[in-house]
Amino acid sequence: MSEQQPHVTNSDIVKEFFKKHKSTALFALDILLNLVIIAAMVFIIRSFLISPFQVYGPSMCDTLNNIDNSCQHGYGEYIIVNKLGYQNFFGWQVGTPQRGDIVVFHPPMNKEEFFIKRVIGLPGETVELKDGYVYIHNSAHPEGYKLDEPYLNSTNSGNTHPFTDNMTIFEVPSDGYFVMGDNRTQSSDARTCFKESITSGGCDQPGGTPYIKISNIEGKAWIVLWPLSKIEVLNNPSYSI
Image (cartoon, rainbow, N blue to C red; front, side, top):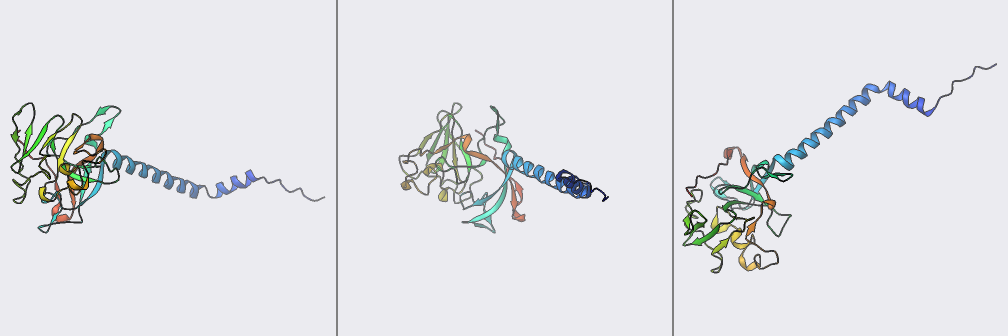
């Protein structure tokens, strides 16, 4: 009489496989779990806390993208953007942009592109461009206050002009901000509704506006990270207004 062979099921085969390779399987699972955690942390950090950004063009020169005493017309400095300061968590606004903040944002008519400029006019204020200077009209200075801008180089100081004669006064809405680049002679900013020139139709296009909302803003330029010779923390200027 022949000996009866034990009945082996698929379940038995799987159990035996995991028994032999238990340590390998646990190791692979541990690696996978760690990768998921790392990816989640990177996503959270880049979405809500900080993220890298490479500055393009000369519009913020000399403050940014002035390398070896030359304004870069392509990609240049790497910076860290602080995104936490302007976050809104379930209706709680952490903070809002202040005058002098350098902000990275989407222009109103282009959600794919990023700009970097300095906040000049705050919600509810009126910004006036006159005789090459910026004047701020608000409740404290209804007649207008000439803004001292120490970050402008000798070429741009006293050289902030509108691009058309009929766009010298900008009434910032209650939910808007007026921004300009520090390189006033080469910056496509609020004065042109973020187009290369006023004649390109930026302000005349549907939705064209010289103002950005906080929802357009990705964050505040915080640290210059590269090149090494330019490493610094970007601090706000001291305004007397």
